Amino acid sequence: MNATQNLLRKILPASFLGLSLSSCAVLALLFAVSFSDVLLQVACEECFGISPEGIFVVNGTEGRTVEDSVSPGLPPTVVVDQEPERSSYLAEVGLTCNDLFSLSELSFEGSPGAGQSLGNLRSGGVAVVTAEDPAARLGGQASAPVRVYVTNSATDQVLAMDASTRRVLGAVSVGSRPRGIAATPNGEKLFVANEDSGSVSVVETATLTEIVRIPLPGDAEPFDIAITPDGQEAWVTGHETSGFVHILDTSLHAVMQSVRVGRSPVQVALSPDGTLAYVTNEGDNRLSILDVWTRTVLRSLTVPSAYGVAFDPVGAQVYVSSRTTPGRVRMFDVASDAELAAWDVGEKPEYLAVDGFAMRLFVSNRLSDFLSVVNLYSGEVESTIPAPRGLGPVALVPATP
Image (cartoon, rainbow, N blue to C red; front, side):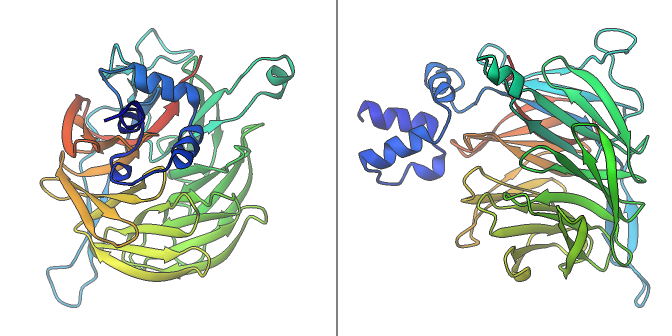
Protein backbone atom coordinates (compact mmCIF):
# COMPACT_ATOMS: atom_id res chain seq x y z
CA MET A 1 0.00 0.00 0.00
CA ASN A 2 1.52 3.36 -1.01
CA ALA A 3 1.69 6.55 1.07
CA THR A 4 -1.37 8.06 -0.59
CA GLN A 5 -3.48 5.02 0.19
CA ASN A 6 -2.27 5.07 3.79
CA LEU A 7 -3.23 8.73 4.04
CA LEU A 8 -6.68 8.09 2.61
CA ARG A 9 -7.34 5.27 5.07
CA LYS A 10 -6.70 7.72 7.89
CA ILE A 11 -8.77 10.66 6.68
CA LEU A 12 -11.66 9.22 4.69
CA PRO A 13 -14.84 7.58 6.03
CA ALA A 14 -14.99 3.82 5.80
CA SER A 15 -17.65 4.08 3.10
CA PHE A 16 -15.04 5.65 0.74
CA LEU A 17 -12.34 3.04 1.13
CA GLY A 18 -13.69 0.72 -1.55
CA LEU A 19 -13.69 3.44 -4.22
CA SER A 20 -11.11 3.67 -6.99
CA LEU A 21 -9.88 7.27 -6.99
CA SER A 22 -7.76 9.03 -9.58
CA SER A 23 -5.00 11.41 -8.53
CA CYS A 24 -7.19 14.40 -9.36
CA ALA A 25 -10.03 13.03 -7.27
CA VAL A 26 -7.65 12.43 -4.37
CA LEU A 27 -6.46 16.05 -4.51
CA ALA A 28 -10.05 17.32 -4.67
CA LEU A 29 -11.01 15.33 -1.61
CA LEU A 30 -7.98 16.45 0.34
CA PHE A 31 -8.46 20.12 -0.36
CA ALA A 32 -12.18 19.85 0.43
CA VAL A 33 -11.30 19.48 4.11
CA SER A 34 -9.23 21.71 6.35
CA PHE A 35 -5.51 21.16 5.75
CA SER A 36 -4.77 21.63 9.44
CA ASP A 37 -7.33 18.95 10.27
CA VAL A 38 -5.63 16.58 7.84
CA LEU A 39 -2.24 17.18 9.43
CA LEU A 40 -3.62 16.54 12.90
CA GLN A 41 -5.42 13.48 11.63
CA VAL A 42 -2.27 11.94 10.17
CA ALA A 43 0.04 12.94 13.03
CA CYS A 44 -2.19 11.53 15.74
CA GLU A 45 -1.69 7.78 15.29
CA GLU A 46 -3.25 6.90 18.64
CA CYS A 47 -6.69 8.28 17.82
CA PHE A 48 -6.80 8.76 14.05
CA GLY A 49 -10.30 9.42 12.86
CA ILE A 50 -10.98 12.03 15.54
CA SER A 51 -11.10 15.60 14.32
CA PRO A 52 -10.05 18.43 16.65
CA GLU A 53 -13.40 19.26 18.15
CA GLY A 54 -15.33 18.92 21.37
CA ILE A 55 -18.73 17.52 22.19
CA PHE A 56 -21.24 19.26 24.39
CA VAL A 57 -23.86 17.15 26.11
CA VAL A 58 -26.76 18.55 28.13
CA ASN A 59 -29.37 16.88 30.26
CA GLY A 60 -32.72 16.35 28.61
CA THR A 61 -36.36 16.92 29.44
CA GLU A 62 -38.66 14.05 30.22
CA GLY A 63 -39.45 11.85 27.26
CA ARG A 64 -42.91 11.04 25.95
CA THR A 65 -43.85 7.77 24.27
CA VAL A 66 -47.15 7.21 22.49
CA GLU A 67 -48.48 3.68 22.88
CA ASP A 68 -51.58 2.01 21.48
CA SER A 69 -54.44 1.81 23.94
CA VAL A 70 -55.14 -1.59 25.48
CA SER A 71 -58.87 -1.01 24.94
CA PRO A 72 -60.18 -0.91 21.36
CA GLY A 73 -61.65 2.42 20.36
CA LEU A 74 -59.83 4.45 23.00
CA PRO A 75 -57.17 7.04 22.08
CA PRO A 76 -53.47 6.20 22.38
CA THR A 77 -51.81 6.43 25.77
CA VAL A 78 -48.98 8.89 26.40
CA VAL A 79 -46.32 7.50 28.71
CA VAL A 80 -43.90 9.93 30.36
CA ASP A 81 -40.41 8.54 30.89
CA GLN A 82 -38.34 8.99 34.00
CA GLU A 83 -36.94 12.46 34.68
CA PRO A 84 -33.16 12.91 34.66
CA GLU A 85 -31.57 12.06 37.98
CA ARG A 86 -29.70 15.36 38.17
CA SER A 87 -31.50 18.67 38.36
CA SER A 88 -29.01 20.22 35.97
CA TYR A 89 -26.00 19.16 33.95
CA LEU A 90 -23.91 20.51 31.13
CA ALA A 91 -20.79 18.63 30.15
CA GLU A 92 -17.97 18.64 27.65
CA VAL A 93 -16.26 15.62 26.15
CA GLY A 94 -12.82 16.65 24.95
CA LEU A 95 -11.54 15.01 21.79
CA THR A 96 -7.79 15.34 21.92
CA CYS A 97 -4.94 12.90 21.42
CA ASN A 98 -3.74 13.10 25.01
CA ASP A 99 -7.15 12.96 26.64
CA LEU A 100 -9.52 11.29 24.24
CA PHE A 101 -12.59 10.88 26.41
CA SER A 102 -12.74 13.20 29.39
CA LEU A 103 -16.12 14.18 30.75
CA SER A 104 -16.37 17.24 32.96
CA GLU A 105 -18.98 19.69 34.10
CA LEU A 106 -18.54 23.20 32.78
CA SER A 107 -18.20 26.30 34.91
CA PHE A 108 -20.26 29.40 34.32
CA GLU A 109 -19.72 33.04 35.04
CA GLY A 110 -21.59 33.80 38.25
CA SER A 111 -21.65 30.17 39.40
CA PRO A 112 -20.82 29.43 43.05
CA GLY A 113 -17.45 27.95 42.10
CA ALA A 114 -15.43 25.95 39.64
CA GLY A 115 -17.17 22.84 38.40
CA GLN A 116 -20.64 24.08 39.29
CA SER A 117 -23.17 23.69 36.51
CA LEU A 118 -25.94 26.11 35.69
CA GLY A 119 -28.91 25.48 37.94
CA ASN A 120 -32.33 24.29 36.84
CA LEU A 121 -31.38 23.24 33.31
CA ARG A 122 -33.67 21.10 31.15
CA SER A 123 -32.71 21.12 27.50
CA GLY A 124 -34.20 19.69 24.35
CA GLY A 125 -31.76 21.15 21.87
CA VAL A 126 -28.34 22.65 21.19
CA ALA A 127 -27.22 24.81 18.26
CA VAL A 128 -23.63 25.73 17.43
CA VAL A 129 -22.79 28.91 15.50
CA THR A 130 -19.37 29.75 14.10
CA ALA A 131 -18.99 33.18 12.51
CA GLU A 132 -15.91 35.09 11.47
CA ASP A 133 -15.16 38.29 13.32
CA PRO A 134 -14.83 41.09 10.68
CA ALA A 135 -12.75 43.28 13.00
CA ALA A 136 -10.28 40.48 13.65
CA ARG A 137 -10.11 39.69 9.95
CA LEU A 138 -9.28 43.32 9.11
CA GLY A 139 -6.56 43.18 11.73
CA GLY A 140 -4.97 40.22 9.99
CA GLN A 141 -6.07 37.69 12.57
CA ALA A 142 -7.97 34.52 11.84
CA SER A 143 -10.91 34.38 14.20
CA ALA A 144 -13.94 32.15 14.37
CA PRO A 145 -15.70 32.66 17.69
CA VAL A 146 -17.99 29.78 18.52
CA ARG A 147 -21.31 30.31 20.23
CA VAL A 148 -23.37 27.49 21.72
CA TYR A 149 -27.11 28.06 22.17
CA VAL A 150 -29.03 25.79 24.52
CA THR A 151 -32.78 25.63 25.08
CA ASN A 152 -33.89 25.52 28.71
CA SER A 153 -37.49 24.40 29.15
CA ALA A 154 -37.24 24.84 32.91
CA THR A 155 -37.09 28.62 32.45
CA ASP A 156 -38.52 28.95 28.91
CA GLN A 157 -35.30 30.51 27.68
CA VAL A 158 -32.47 30.09 25.22
CA LEU A 159 -28.99 30.42 26.75
CA ALA A 160 -26.03 31.75 24.77
CA MET A 161 -22.57 30.52 25.73
CA ASP A 162 -19.06 31.34 24.54
CA ALA A 163 -17.49 27.99 23.65
CA SER A 164 -13.92 29.12 24.38
CA THR A 165 -14.48 30.73 27.79
CA ARG A 166 -17.36 28.42 28.81
CA ARG A 167 -19.32 31.43 30.01
CA VAL A 168 -23.00 32.15 29.60
CA LEU A 169 -23.27 35.40 27.67
CA GLY A 170 -26.98 35.92 28.13
CA ALA A 171 -30.45 34.47 27.87
CA VAL A 172 -33.59 35.29 25.94
CA SER A 173 -37.15 34.30 26.82
CA VAL A 174 -39.06 32.35 24.18
CA GLY A 175 -42.27 30.28 24.19
CA SER A 176 -43.39 27.64 26.64
CA ARG A 177 -41.23 24.51 26.92
CA PRO A 178 -38.63 25.17 24.20
CA ARG A 179 -37.22 21.99 22.70
CA GLY A 180 -35.32 21.82 19.42
CA ILE A 181 -33.23 24.69 18.13
CA ALA A 182 -31.45 25.35 14.82
CA ALA A 183 -29.35 28.19 13.43
CA THR A 184 -29.40 29.57 9.92
CA PRO A 185 -26.20 28.89 7.95
CA ASN A 186 -25.06 32.51 8.33
CA GLY A 187 -25.59 32.32 12.08
CA GLU A 188 -27.85 35.38 12.18
CA LYS A 189 -31.04 33.70 13.38
CA LEU A 190 -32.10 30.89 15.68
CA PHE A 191 -35.37 29.01 15.25
CA VAL A 192 -36.74 27.49 18.45
CA ALA A 193 -39.55 24.91 18.77
CA ASN A 194 -41.87 25.81 21.67
CA GLU A 195 -43.69 22.55 22.35
CA ASP A 196 -46.36 23.76 24.77
CA SER A 197 -46.94 27.06 22.96
CA GLY A 198 -47.47 25.47 19.56
CA SER A 199 -45.12 28.06 18.09
CA VAL A 200 -41.63 28.73 16.77
CA SER A 201 -39.56 31.60 18.16
CA VAL A 202 -37.12 33.44 15.88
CA VAL A 203 -34.15 34.85 17.79
CA GLU A 204 -31.64 37.34 16.40
CA THR A 205 -28.20 36.23 17.55
CA ALA A 206 -26.54 39.65 17.29
CA THR A 207 -28.85 41.15 19.91
CA LEU A 208 -30.09 37.93 21.53
CA THR A 209 -33.70 39.03 21.21
CA GLU A 210 -36.85 37.26 20.05
CA ILE A 211 -37.92 39.14 16.92
CA VAL A 212 -41.07 37.14 16.15
CA ARG A 213 -43.04 34.15 17.33
CA ILE A 214 -44.64 32.07 14.57
CA PRO A 215 -47.84 30.16 15.48
CA LEU A 216 -48.17 26.72 13.91
CA PRO A 217 -51.51 25.39 12.62
CA GLY A 218 -53.79 22.90 14.36
CA ASP A 219 -52.74 21.11 17.52
CA ALA A 220 -49.03 21.37 16.73
CA GLU A 221 -46.55 20.43 19.45
CA PRO A 222 -43.28 21.53 17.79
CA PHE A 223 -40.39 19.38 18.88
CA ASP A 224 -37.38 19.52 16.56
CA ILE A 225 -36.11 21.87 13.84
CA ALA A 226 -33.73 21.57 10.90
CA ILE A 227 -32.84 24.33 8.44
CA THR A 228 -32.06 23.73 4.77
CA PRO A 229 -28.44 24.28 3.69
CA ASP A 230 -29.47 27.36 1.70
CA GLY A 231 -31.06 28.82 4.82
CA GLN A 232 -34.41 29.45 3.16
CA GLU A 233 -36.61 26.94 4.99
CA ALA A 234 -37.01 25.60 8.51
CA TRP A 235 -38.55 22.13 8.87
CA VAL A 236 -40.33 21.60 12.17
CA THR A 237 -41.71 18.33 13.54
CA GLY A 238 -45.01 18.41 15.41
CA HIS A 239 -44.99 15.83 18.18
CA GLU A 240 -48.79 15.51 18.14
CA THR A 241 -50.41 12.18 17.26
CA SER A 242 -51.79 13.56 13.98
CA GLY A 243 -48.18 13.82 12.79
CA PHE A 244 -47.12 16.78 10.66
CA VAL A 245 -43.92 18.43 9.53
CA HIS A 246 -44.37 22.19 9.18
CA ILE A 247 -42.23 24.04 6.65
CA LEU A 248 -41.43 27.69 7.42
CA ASP A 249 -40.02 30.45 5.25
CA THR A 250 -37.06 31.80 7.23
CA SER A 251 -37.25 35.26 5.65
CA LEU A 252 -41.01 35.81 5.73
CA HIS A 253 -41.35 34.06 9.11
CA ALA A 254 -44.44 32.25 7.94
CA VAL A 255 -45.68 28.67 7.56
CA MET A 256 -45.51 27.69 3.90
CA GLN A 257 -46.89 24.16 4.08
CA SER A 258 -47.64 21.30 6.48
CA VAL A 259 -46.97 17.72 5.39
CA ARG A 260 -48.46 14.69 7.14
CA VAL A 261 -45.91 12.03 8.05
CA GLY A 262 -46.32 9.38 10.77
CA ARG A 263 -47.71 9.46 14.30
CA SER A 264 -45.85 11.61 16.82
CA PRO A 265 -42.88 12.73 14.70
CA VAL A 266 -39.84 13.48 16.82
CA GLN A 267 -36.63 14.47 15.06
CA VAL A 268 -35.89 15.71 11.55
CA ALA A 269 -32.58 15.72 9.66
CA LEU A 270 -31.87 17.25 6.27
CA SER A 271 -29.31 15.75 3.89
CA PRO A 272 -26.16 17.86 3.34
CA ASP A 273 -27.19 18.56 -0.25
CA GLY A 274 -30.62 19.76 0.90
CA THR A 275 -32.66 17.33 -1.20
CA LEU A 276 -33.98 14.89 1.42
CA ALA A 277 -35.59 15.15 4.84
CA TYR A 278 -35.69 12.19 7.24
CA VAL A 279 -38.28 12.21 10.03
CA THR A 280 -38.53 9.72 12.88
CA ASN A 281 -42.09 8.91 13.96
CA GLU A 282 -42.14 7.65 17.51
CA GLY A 283 -45.82 6.72 17.47
CA ASP A 284 -45.84 4.17 14.65
CA ASN A 285 -42.26 2.85 14.30
CA ARG A 286 -41.68 4.61 11.03
CA LEU A 287 -38.91 6.59 9.37
CA SER A 288 -40.38 8.95 6.77
CA ILE A 289 -38.26 10.08 3.81
CA LEU A 290 -39.36 13.29 2.11
CA ASP A 291 -38.38 15.14 -1.04
CA VAL A 292 -37.47 18.68 0.06
CA TRP A 293 -38.22 20.25 -3.31
CA THR A 294 -41.68 18.73 -3.81
CA ARG A 295 -42.41 18.52 -0.06
CA THR A 296 -43.87 15.06 -0.40
CA VAL A 297 -43.26 11.76 1.37
CA LEU A 298 -41.29 9.50 -0.97
CA ARG A 299 -41.36 6.36 1.15
CA SER A 300 -41.21 5.07 4.72
CA LEU A 301 -39.02 2.51 6.46
CA THR A 302 -39.98 0.45 9.49
CA VAL A 303 -37.75 1.29 12.45
CA PRO A 304 -38.88 0.17 15.93
CA SER A 305 -39.32 3.11 18.35
CA ALA A 306 -37.55 5.49 15.95
CA TYR A 307 -36.33 8.61 17.74
CA GLY A 308 -33.00 10.21 16.78
CA VAL A 309 -31.71 10.75 13.25
CA ALA A 310 -28.46 12.16 11.82
CA PHE A 311 -26.62 12.15 8.48
CA ASP A 312 -22.94 11.59 7.94
CA PRO A 313 -21.09 14.68 6.61
CA VAL A 314 -21.40 13.68 2.94
CA GLY A 315 -24.97 12.35 3.12
CA ALA A 316 -24.14 8.78 2.09
CA GLN A 317 -25.46 7.18 5.28
CA VAL A 318 -28.09 8.10 7.83
CA TYR A 319 -28.20 6.92 11.45
CA VAL A 320 -31.38 6.28 13.43
CA SER A 321 -31.74 5.50 17.14
CA SER A 322 -34.41 3.15 18.49
CA ARG A 323 -35.65 3.62 22.06
CA THR A 324 -36.00 -0.11 22.51
CA THR A 325 -34.59 -2.42 25.20
CA PRO A 326 -31.74 -2.79 24.60
CA GLY A 327 -31.40 0.43 22.66
CA ARG A 328 -30.18 0.20 19.10
CA VAL A 329 -28.71 2.49 16.48
CA ARG A 330 -29.07 1.58 12.83
CA MET A 331 -27.11 2.75 9.79
CA PHE A 332 -28.97 3.00 6.48
CA ASP A 333 -27.62 3.54 3.00
CA VAL A 334 -29.30 6.67 1.63
CA ALA A 335 -29.18 5.54 -2.00
CA SER A 336 -30.72 2.08 -1.48
CA ASP A 337 -32.48 2.28 1.95
CA ALA A 338 -30.56 -0.87 2.91
CA GLU A 339 -29.72 -1.36 6.57
CA LEU A 340 -25.93 -1.59 6.57
CA ALA A 341 -25.28 -2.10 10.27
CA ALA A 342 -26.85 -1.97 13.71
CA TRP A 343 -25.38 -1.60 17.19
CA ASP A 344 -26.73 -2.26 20.66
CA VAL A 345 -26.10 0.77 22.85
CA GLY A 346 -27.63 1.97 26.14
CA GLU A 347 -31.24 2.19 27.27
CA LYS A 348 -33.44 4.62 25.33
CA PRO A 349 -30.85 6.15 22.97
CA GLU A 350 -32.14 9.49 21.74
CA TYR A 351 -29.65 11.99 20.29
CA LEU A 352 -26.87 11.34 17.78
CA ALA A 353 -23.80 13.20 16.54
CA VAL A 354 -21.32 12.18 13.84
CA ASP A 355 -17.81 13.64 13.84
CA GLY A 356 -16.54 15.64 10.89
CA PHE A 357 -14.64 12.72 9.36
CA ALA A 358 -17.53 10.25 9.71
CA MET A 359 -15.34 8.08 11.88
CA ARG A 360 -17.28 8.06 15.14
CA LEU A 361 -20.92 8.24 16.13
CA PHE A 362 -21.80 9.55 19.59
CA VAL A 363 -25.05 8.41 21.20
CA SER A 364 -26.70 9.84 24.31
CA ASN A 365 -28.57 7.13 26.20
CA ARG A 366 -31.32 8.68 28.24
CA LEU A 367 -31.76 6.01 30.88
CA SER A 368 -28.18 4.67 31.01
CA ASP A 369 -25.27 6.21 32.87
CA PHE A 370 -23.02 6.51 29.83
CA LEU A 371 -22.64 7.81 26.29
CA SER A 372 -21.98 5.23 23.59
CA VAL A 373 -19.24 5.72 21.01
CA VAL A 374 -19.49 3.76 17.76
CA ASN A 375 -16.33 3.50 15.68
CA LEU A 376 -17.65 3.69 12.12
CA TYR A 377 -14.26 2.66 10.74
CA SER A 378 -14.14 -0.65 12.61
CA GLY A 379 -17.91 -1.07 12.78
CA GLU A 380 -17.92 -1.69 16.54
CA VAL A 381 -19.06 0.05 19.70
CA GLU A 382 -15.59 0.99 20.84
CA SER A 383 -16.22 2.81 24.08
CA THR A 384 -18.68 4.14 26.62
CA ILE A 385 -18.20 7.44 28.43
CA PRO A 386 -19.49 7.53 32.02
CA ALA A 387 -22.15 10.20 32.46
CA PRO A 388 -25.20 10.91 34.62
CA ARG A 389 -28.51 9.44 33.53
CA GLY A 390 -30.86 11.73 31.71
CA LEU A 391 -28.41 13.21 29.21
CA GLY A 392 -30.07 14.51 26.07
CA PRO A 393 -28.91 16.59 23.10
CA VAL A 394 -25.37 16.23 21.77
CA ALA A 395 -23.56 18.84 19.67
CA LEU A 396 -20.15 18.92 18.00
CA VAL A 397 -18.16 22.07 18.66
CA PRO A 398 -15.12 23.05 16.56
CA ALA A 399 -11.84 23.53 18.39
CA THR A 400 -11.25 27.07 19.63
CA PRO A 401 -7.90 28.81 20.22
